[in-house]
Image (cartoon, rainbow, N blue to C red; front, top):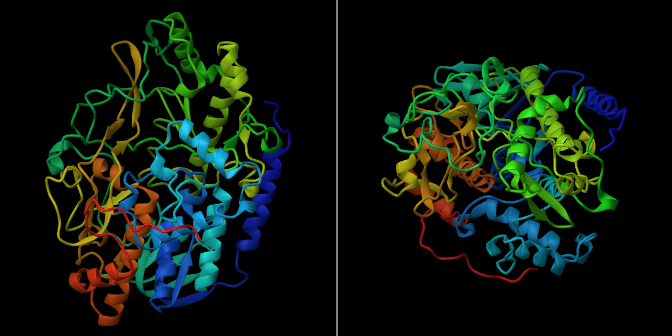
Length: 567
């Protein structure tokens, strides 16, 4: 794991050059029917749908890159039941399948070998099913190319590096939004497709950050957990700098305090990480550079955990510390797994309400944490030699994320702000205890929260906050959960940071669902424009008819979509 001496300097220079190139010589005033703020997967679909419905649109991205997590390393689609995906969201995965139907797309793998490897790793067969002309796992660069082609076909104007400075309101309507670089965007309708809900917040709309109490919405899985059995330390690990001496202080990566009362709400946000597109293919593998000023002593908690596992006879294995999911061409989407992994627990509390510079710092700290974690597992003598040897076989793909030196360009912001509107989706919707009659799409994934804190409990380090409970069945999402209260804003949609409790959001917060909700929002925005009405007054029957015509799936009938062979 030899570091490239000038890698960070070179990357900083490249990013600075790109940043200068993106600053306009003269501020622009841009007026359109619809302004989409945030070039995530949702933002791209919203912009494409606006052009499909013959409205002028501009896609405004605060950063340099488009596609959010879908192009940023999350190549293993999370959804639950794929039959719940319709509309343009399904079209995206159809386009992915068309790409991989070409022999030329398999430059390292053979197609048959890839499917065989995926199945042998116990991956869900539904993730591999190309018989309905869709494919659910993909390389980041392929997703990026699909989105770029899509935007070009639709003639969508895209402006990057547009960091939001202010929002000008005219009564209960957004009149215009201004960027730090001086650009101003005026539109009839605005759609906030950021993972953070920045436009929503600056418009003065009500929102929540953190976990609500169970009592807030009559739930059982929200708030501070009494027990956290999964993604947990499986043996006792001493948390103190001087073992057994609480007065010596806590080791790094452990938060102080007792953790709170089970069932109560708090301001803690589930952990973030990066989804790593790594490979073991030597020809396409780059080394993992240690973070600046790497100090293995910071990972003493990990060392003690490994020591304790060895002493207990549990023989630690690398797969217990991260979760590689195979992508085409011998690439992976690597996610968090176990008690100590790529999730930087407790390091994101300030992210949501932070300015852009602070967010950049927090994202950099997450990258440095994960690089340190990998370096430790590859080099520390406290790691069993078999694990060290295996870790040294992994590295970033040389042909992915060229602008950021092979590192994913999108921090996995699993949760930030959440809208508070006239209807908030809750655990009751996931459990089919409460249903709605204004469906604009389905969700189907587990009620899934990653850990929110790492504390000391009974003299040992313990993670708190992980929840994994499946819904009863795919369930509908309410139109009312995508729009603010009318008195707060009449021309804003929020398909990503929509109105949901923390635990229900854990089920909804999947990239295909964000695309579904964004398409539905855009369709409603067009109706609101044409009829000159607030978004809260859109006639649902009219909206539903158009969504169904566009092949959105609004009700669960337990029927798989029609099969077709790949073109």
